[in-house]
Length: 146
Image: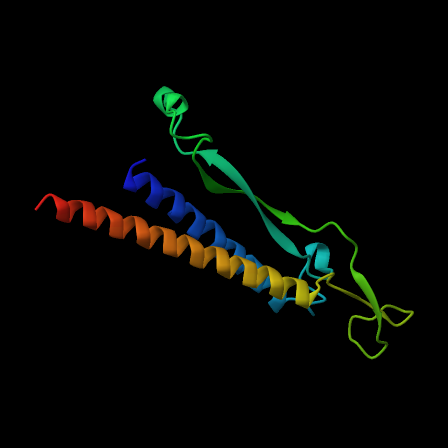
């Protein structure tokens, strides 16, 4: 496997996790937003859907006996909007309360979003480490030729 393939795989992972962290940040920032969704309703939670794409479709990659699985990189397939109904919270003093005193709030669990954010951060760090290691190996390989 070339160093460039390793760097390409890591860089697609970095981009995907960065987008995931942005979406999770948006969810956390809008956890109390009652007028940010479609039609003026509450904000809807979003999540990123990843897809594995083959790094190469060359015939020789499929015949390589050193690899048991095909190399893949990450692609963002979709940004999924949560279809769950909003939470109804009794707060008659809220500006968006209905005639019964209930407010429709986003269906966002702050703790779950924080756990997802930590997971995305760890995945980003792992991809950064893999990218740096591939870069260091390429530099060392070039130093051998001196």
